[in-house]
Length: 596
Image (cartoon, rainbow, N blue to C red):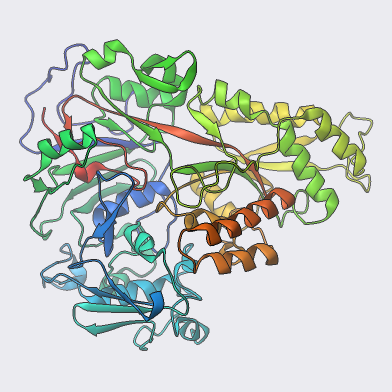
């Protein structure tokens, strides 16, 4: 099979790596997603695919150093890291001058400079009830005076002209944020993909269609979008003059990349073509034929094909290297344990699996104990994953390596638990509710081959404990809508670190985040109280003790079935320069070069 949109640049022959046609002067990078994007308005999206594009179009105040490990936050459009005062409650940022938005009709032919007011507008907009941002929790309830502005919002949304003490400009290039309580993780938050400089006149010009008209100050602009199929990014002609300036440190790969890229214009790529290929086999064939330049992140090496691409250590399958025939052709491998987790969320509002009574908790625990995670890590992940035992994954501050949160695989105990709480087996061989009525668990799933494979293992889990399950198939963007609206029973989820701090993960079960990142629609006053205390604390023993208590509450209520932490196995063609998997960027295309 070929890509859904033909690749028009020079193709490569796998055996020789020789171009079929003379390379064009324009540098083009071909990349792919394994699921469809949802749009490109930072305030309206929360999926990694859309965020990967947004990272290339917009500018956050801060960003991550591409090569530094552990990950380091550095200035982006500001002259230096923010000044912090008032006991960690006030942050002051000084923007660089001469940064301009990409050209757009909304600017009426004028060159539009980025100013501090654009970030005031962006931050307010995240909390606008009319926008209904899935990440509205980022600042709501935290900035001085913002909640009062939100409460006054009418049918027309926020009054953006109202001055708010917590988010204001001191002059054209100075932004000040004042919080009710210390916000130690703020620099990490501001380096992610969500708090981007947006121009008010652009948002107002495109109204309800802002997802299709992203206009930022970043290195690229969107030139073509066929939803769920193809996107093209081209250079922003107004992008500032920057060069690669890496400090490689002691890492051998980092030193190599620094020697390849330092002093070159940033970015090197002229055009980025992104196709959506949901199936694994066509993805790998496209890379193998040279139609794709890089597989990194979503997707990396398709897991069903791991053993064709990597040679796994027979004693430890988490240790791997490229097979010799690929390594000899110059294919590059960059791998790391993902700073992320996968899980299965129960909708705590669902009439079948939701609720906090002992019988519902017993039902969820039994389902968790009936699912054999060792099988899926072996057969689906091909050994390239570790079981989740704590909400915060390894390599992220706040992780506790000694905590065990996942219920062990134990079908016998699961059946005994259901018996104890009145889920009796009926004449048809399936269990009924304690009141004797039949029930079926609703399970959201996708249409791809890998989805079907996961469904087989879930069917086995439900068969072990004599429960009915209905696989409700829908596209990923439809699943996201169902998750946000709490209209499902059980669904798979994944969360990659926007930033390497435990707060980014513990907020996934914070009650007010229901409708956004709290996919389980979990409501626990005890959890929420501990979370509110934790988010004003810096990384350290005091916060870690709170995190342990929160994990214990989650084990007790069981809003999740803990799944696994994947290894990211990224590959790039021999002609790609600067390739290194990053744990927090959703895509690394702008840091690369192609020399065919």
